[in-house]
Length: 284
Image 1 (cartoon, one colour):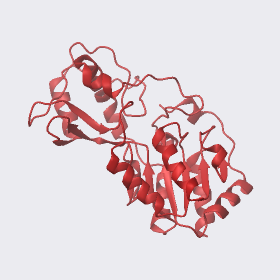
Image 2 (cartoon, one colour):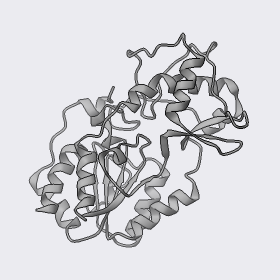
Image 3 (tube, helix red, strand yellow):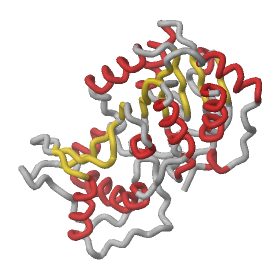
Image 4 (cartoon, helix red, strand yellow):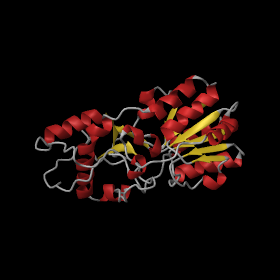
């Protein structure tokens, strides 16, 4: 279920806004930073969009400190996984992939963990906050495919059907409270704690991952931000790098972002349709 922000009516970008954005980006190597607003048209909700319901996601410290927290996390995550994994790229993802093929952008830095940019055909993608389709053992470092872990959890919890009435969360989880009988997965190599390879609240973006994102940005001459409110520190740090280099910055997002005052042009509209219109101007 998408957030209220994705369902309400929003005005489309005006021709003058699109022309100004195209003028700022045309002829320059463009790096792209995307957030949850790019994936709302694929049925994945936004954490912070205007009208999004308040959430209290589990922190990394809670996950590490208490087996009951881990049981609650994995139960909700397992219930949401099949619907999350079944999401498909939308026009916004496909347009960015086509712009990369055309040489108009040099890659995508994404705060999303859904893998939809890669499924849409983007080649250079920095998954700044990780990806839900991999699971790592926090003890020995062994990596598992999420599909394999999901199969193990289904086998261990045959009583659990996925109720479609539960509301899907932005990170592929659902709210679930009946956890007393749920069996959590453990590492088959060492018995250690397993965690999806995503950055939890209260957890730092890996140094090497941010360095990869920074390198992509510094190899560009302009920054396009799509579907992010820039509420997370990693996005602001990249915006800081862009403004220090005096790059043109174009922001497309429904609602206010923390970078609006520094944008060359801000377009308050949906990402899929705006990116499609903007791409036509950049490649014509």
